[in-house]
Length: 465
Image (spheres, rainbow, N blue to C red):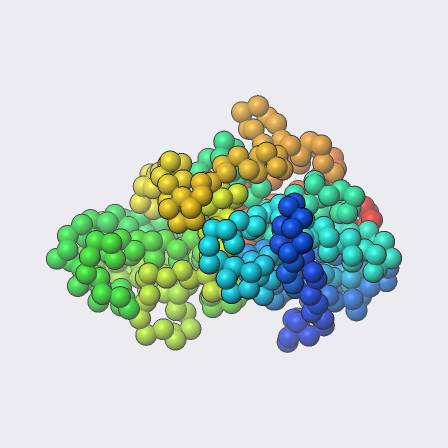
């Protein structure tokens, strides 16, 4: 009954026309190396909204892999939470993203310049900044929060800096999606399940389509036909270029599952509400085995363009390009090749994609070639702890005052904290939630469970303050 009483307030979201209007931007002087003490510094941006502050709390967002404005705009629940908690709201930008560049335009110019990009360096930035913010706002208790990688940082920050963070609220934090903990195939099984849940035929067509495409790109005589069918900007004139076509399709199906929100969004790309359902209802053929190859591939291409070109503004498809818009791909790739090794694989049997096994030696060699350094596969377990399902152990048994929210439609559910390790940890799993749906602005099209869980989050934080 207590949660239901919160629903009317939470459903009336603060949907400002300009989400940045109530924030003031500042620069904080951070050390380039928080551990070497060389004295070199850079400006780290942070945004502050103190219109709801009544001295009760500091709500601190741990910025992730992109300009911080992007995460302010996609975290519309947090101003509502700040109002309920009487909190000042602070969004900190992650080093090497947005405008917080330790070496300016040369930050990615060399391995030497990139070596200060890591979670522990970013968290040390936040520790220094939070110490300053706490002094400024009268030692109010701190709630650290974030979504996705930012949620991982929020959870880890609570573990590593309990004297600075009293509570953490981590939305879609795959902190257990690490080597020796996760089954690498589970990520793609969740994506495939999202499509199968809408229509098993949809799953079947996509699975068969990938196999047909793989067969066609083995023969160079098909390249010109594929170039026309996929309307590529590039000339498909070699095996290396043709090999991008399956990846181009995969990226679209992956991101549509990850951002399978119930209303139209523009988070990674303009898309309709429930994009997975939209794809299966509008573009997938009803035939699976007898349809001509090109008809199946045409359907798959049209489906992919729900992600790439729903607005209709593109004249051709750039298949050799990362479609993550405002996300900092270079910085994220460096993290994934060094400290954040997140194994993902497909077996082509229990998922709808082409077989793509997780081979660490190949992964490490590619990272060495690109960034001139090998990965640290046990970084997360060593620095922050993880879980061992075989031994029924979780490092979170020692933690408290932590909230984890997860969406079962989200492929990162594969590495999520899906059950509480002790009474001091609250876990909320959304049956119809995609990637950090609960952080987004409340919307009339949200499933009722989202509103209920948002209410529970507020209630839980209030009980801990």
